Length: 464
Image (cartoon, rainbow, N blue to C red; front, side, top):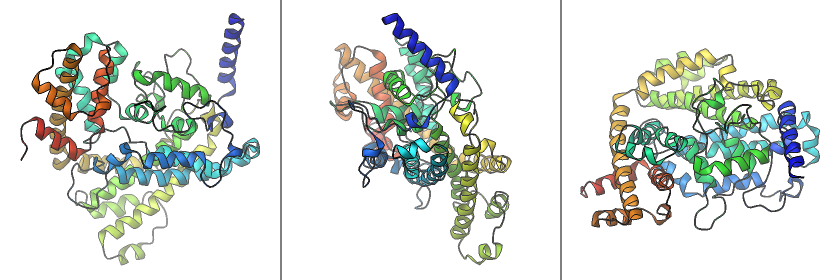
């Protein structure tokens, strides 16, 4: 009987390669810990399951911390530059529109979904929730924060732990990934709670842009292999999610899957917002000349009302007008490309981001290039990223050392004081080095920019 079941499982897996993914399974309402199947038709229409996901994310402490995390300019003193929180809210709005527009067409193409009670708003709710949390795992100080954690273990004092880790565990650390940390945050069980935020599997699937483990690194040019989406500590949770959703496993791979189709829309929402809105921030900050706004934005769209543009008195209003038109244009492009390639996406045959396939790819790349030159490589950004590297390395060092000394029973008085600064949920006892180190990485990654700076001052003896 066991052999027979294994053969049936293998047959089912091979059949999935042929048939591709199906929407009924991809829209699963299951949550971690569920015993009974959740049916769409039985949902309370006043607060649908996918909308509950959005609510739970909004009320989470991890999401709130994004209000003081860098998007473009670290520790900006102005009131109009985006933080990770405002960026995430905007990505969510764009994602909701993408999901709804796609959902309307998909319901006509797949009549069985209507019979099961699905509505186009379900697609919008899933993409909006996944977009809302797309940066929830990012450390302080922007993407340099990820690199700072990685460098601590690759070339800093953290290299001493390499021989106590497996190859994949060590890769998780030296290539620390905010996407994987986000999956950890929303699925990790702590204090007896099942499954972290207990989000629907459909939302979790749409959130996972890179459904693979950290090794092998970038095995192909497929966009889903660009980074990785889960730590070894969340491997079981990841496998549970992808199996429930029927996501396609890549042949001859370790743990690597083709994307949930809606992950392409989450990625597009993020790409649209950071391309256009970071550019807008750079102009409003004076890092990019306003003349670039009209020159480059006009290449993205046709029909800019120049009379209206020049009639607006303030620079923020003029750039805001261009931003709105540009975003609307790219949303339409992303929807069209997704729908044109739906079958290829379901079959795991679509290997680029949606915007990489759009007719404005060259214009988008021009805008990104200017943003890199004028914003991301500006002196103000570089100086604060350098400081962030030092802050993160120092915090990792004192907390990892103290937690390991606690495990070994050789706590110094200083270690005891340091552990008083570390929340109890990040001090869970474990004989496994990887688990102890990952707890500290998760804690440091959870800090806001401002709190990381204040905490660093305390451990360095600067309390003024």
